[in-house]
Image 1 (cartoon, rainbow, N blue to C red):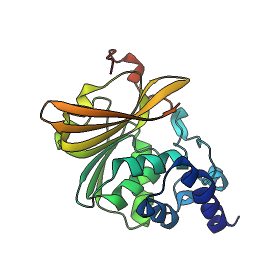
Image 2 (cartoon, rainbow, N blue to C red):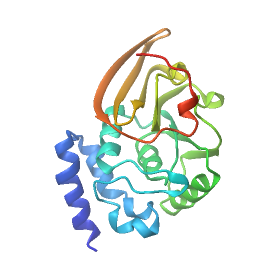
Image 3 (cartoon, rainbow, N blue to C red):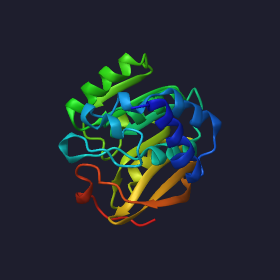
Image 4 (cartoon, rainbow, N blue to C red):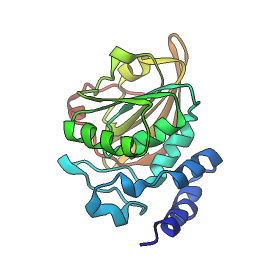
Amino acid sequence: MNYEQARMNMIEQQIRPWEVLDQDVLSLLGELHREDFVPQSYRQLALADVNIPLPHGEVTMTPKMEARILQSLAIEDSETILEIGTGCGYFTALLARSGGIVHSVDIYEDFSREAGEKLKQHGIDNLRLYTGDALHGWPSEAPYDVIAVTGSVPSRMPEYEEQLSVGGRLFVIVGESPIMDACLITRIGDDEWSREYLFETDLPPLVGAAKTSTFEF
């Protein structure tokens, strides 16, 4: 398979049409090889517009969603980032190449371990990987300039917002299948946040998220 041609097609046919035009984001997608992170049996689908299956019944986000999230968060190179859900480690790599230090938490130990090995192979070391339950955030390292939640939650999780620094941004997908809202939340003061709805999508929930209490935006 010609991965370089497939990568170009991914960028031009999937990602640009989804309003991702930030050149830094596009360049990073071209440089960081997604096929090195997905399960070997799905390597040839790494650049396709699909959610790739992972162990434990999990899936990856699509490349265009990863790109859109990265553009929306507008990460600066000195910012501290929390990723909830390490998964295969590709989005972790994108975050680490964009910002300062990444704290990435996954509930599955094998995800954290295998992602760590892949990230090390790519020389990405400005991160800390944890195995644990970050459904309510990861307060031990808060506050964060950026929080990215890679699974959905059925309703608002105010704990995430409280763990942002002033000026910090949170990406989270809220709702229930088949229609969920991708939201960008910015902390603009000690007790004030702005909310922007980016697009509709459908993504499996974080482990345990269905048991959370319901809050409304």
